[in-house]
Length: 588
Image 1 (cartoon, one colour):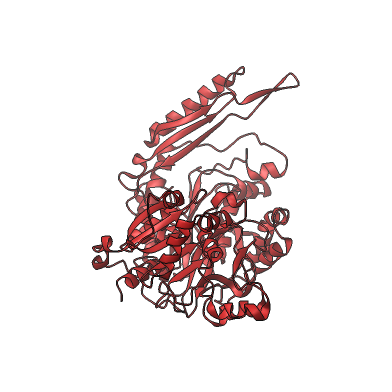
Image 2: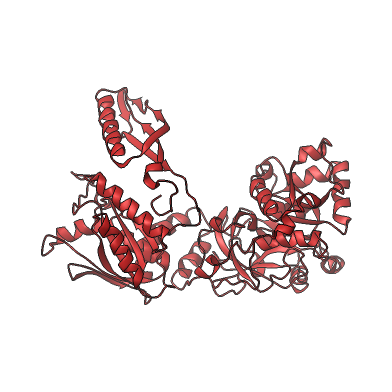
């Protein structure tokens, strides 16, 4: 929470819920819980935070072989606070676009380096004797508020708390995420540091913060902010672009290695676990790719702009039916995206159509099929949903008539994409002409991912030249987008049919690697689609489906990562496809 700019009175406006998990009915446990509650309320009064809700689970014990087995007494605090700008935040990844920069460290533990309960202790099968604690609530509060000031003033580039693993892990995680190096010297106040001192300094999980500041005027201003509230601030060193990790304690080197080598070690356990639940070849591809990865070369060939007031004021003239079925879960995002583009949006269930509560008639210019897992994918993705249309004659007539109208458009994301292909809305005449020659159906489908599991990632796609009304003016752009599917691999029954979809421009969106080259390599291509096919467009350009979720990143704050040049845009680049749909409805 400290890395998001809070509104109102900052920390004083933070509230929290307390979740107690305790075997409180066993001897002595209620007293221990009382002591914990007393410590919590004392600290929260000192920093000005209130508990305004929560829950308790106070029977966390069971009898096994006539013995009491109890869970460790645990208190989980969840904090929340208002913010005036959800986009004003700092992320942990170190930035290199700002030129020279420095790393600063705030030690809220005041020099204590207790290892009790630390990850290091657990590695060696120990618990430890003394755990970290907060001795100075005023220092904590002042440090929190000083960081808030730095964020609101735009001085901080990256930030991370000293938590699991200690200070060394905090620094390495920031470098891993930023794909860069660092050169730091950690001070130790006790004179010449012994081996034990070095271990304590590096791995203690005391309270503390590390943040990055661009060299120059910002460093002076940040130092002044912390000095004003009497919070000690230590300049650890600098961020580097050579990929080397250099860490010293009191001037003596304790770690010198390449970031990619250390990251391989860091990721090794995770990749071993991945191999047990995913296609091992996909895991190997991802592991190899980490060593050579760069920041994605995203670009837009247009200027993302907010929807003009002229289009927002004509909302009632253009209606979009947002359709969902049992198991759909993407209707809220889809409704919001089209609403922001100036449409009047209708949230319609398939039962509304089946029971004739709503008719897909001339009132609607567009229809959107949302993502999710209709009927839990029991019959295969979207097969049950498409069956609802095919086996209800009145509904099928409505769909057929809607598609045939020349003033309509349709859009399907994820499950909606699978649904549209099964209905035949993306069948291409040139591919259809090959059915007799190939003795197969020209209808494309989306089948199980090559990885053998559900994929939820933020990947890169490139928009190809096409006649899509929703992609007008966007060709050549490469943009990040969310994917979340288990059956997203495009499948064509014959190589000639597949090639016809690509050569005709029907494969309008394709997965690309960091260099913007269409790819089948995992994880750039999350499902193994041939030639990176991520979406399809009908021959007349009015109907489009894609497996990714642009409706889940049409707002800038929905992006997990955004390069500096994209931050300058007033809106997300994906807003354009919904605005293009509005422009199509206006006949422009």
